[in-house]
Image (cartoon, rainbow, N blue to C red; front, side):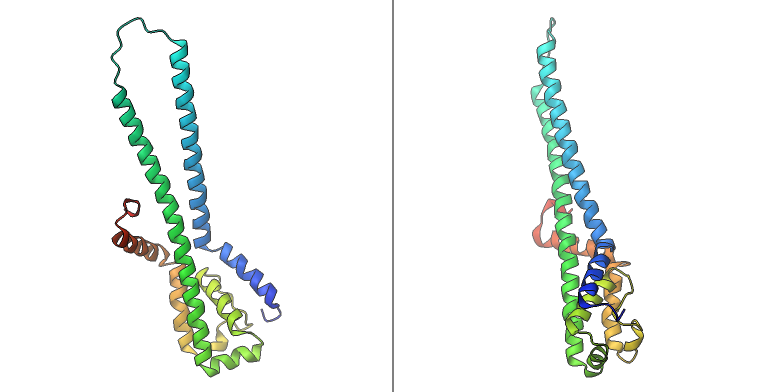
Length: 201
């Protein structure tokens, strides 16, 4: 790993982020939203063509009891349900983006502060020729995506005397994989209490 240049490490961290669970979940939400909107547009087009064909091709000879209000209310209820579903998927996508950004930024900041405050850990990076910012960013992405890559040949063994760094990275690993659904649901509950919006329910 130490033979990689800075640009190669940045490219590798992008690949790790794209391959992570959170990114694939965001991509799934984007595709789900597009599918719902496409289905809705197709249903509206089919309803419009059906109603125009029905009115032009058929002649009623008997007395017809029409309930336009009932049909309109059913259609408006269905449209409202579809609107709510689209809004829920959209807001969930924004929440996932916010969650991922906040976790990465906080992890980057905490790891950087640790290296600034602990000289022994900083000396390890200097001996390997790694910058604090690059290592902090790479470790934030790597631990969140559970790829277990570090830009050192010995991985985290080189930091065996720096237990504080290990304790900082453990929650990051959990928040990106095992506790990801729990943390995301807690974030949704928090936003529901803060905003009182129906989409969060």
